[in-house]
Amino acid sequence: MQPLTPSTKKRSTPSTNARQRRLSVSALILLPVFVSFTASLATAEQRITPVAEGTPAPFAGDLYPVSLSVDLALKLETCQERAKLTLEHSVERYRIRLSQCESTAQVKLYAAQRRLAILDDELSKQDIWYESTIFVIVVTTVSTIAILFGSAYLLDVTLGRRQ
Image (cartoon, rainbow, N blue to C red; front, side, top):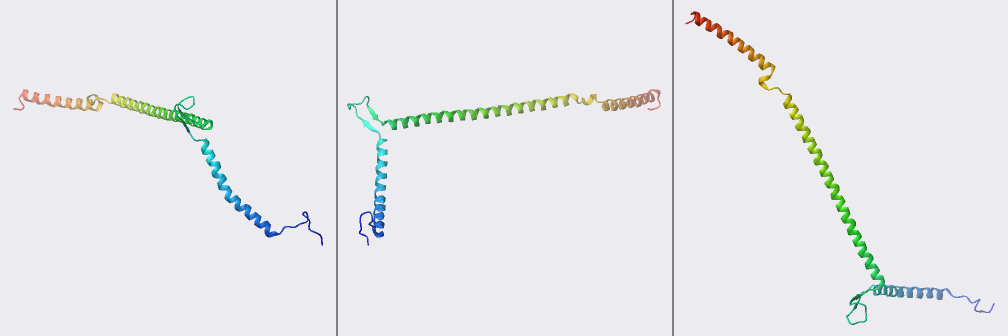
C-alpha cells in the first residue's frame, strides 16, 4: 500500500457534490443581488440632478449626465425627424388625392362636353317637322284635292246645278 501524499490523495465523491451544491446556492443568492445592483447603477446614472440657484453651476436648472443628455438629444432629433417625415407623408398623400380628384373632374367635364356635342349634332340633324318630306307630300296632296273639289263645287254652284 502506498502512503497518501497530497498528489495521490483521492477526494471522496460526497464532498465534491456538497461543494458544487454550495457554489450553486451561492450563485443563486448572489446573482439577483448583482443584477439589482447593476440595474440601480444604470438608473442612478440616468437620474436628473436638480441644481439650485447659488450652487456652483454655470446655470440654474437641472444637471444631466452626458449619457442622458445625448440620449435626450437623440430622442428629440428622432421625434423632429419623425414629425417632419409624417408631415411630408401626409402632404404627399393629400397632394396625390387632390391630383386624382382633379383628374377625375377633368375626365367628367370632358365626358359631359362630348355628350353635349353629340346631342347638339343629333338636334341639328333632325328635320323640323314641317320641313320633312312626308309632311310636304301629304300637305301638297291634301291641298290639291281640296282645291279640285272646292273648285268643282264652286263651278256647280255658279252654273246653277246646285242650289
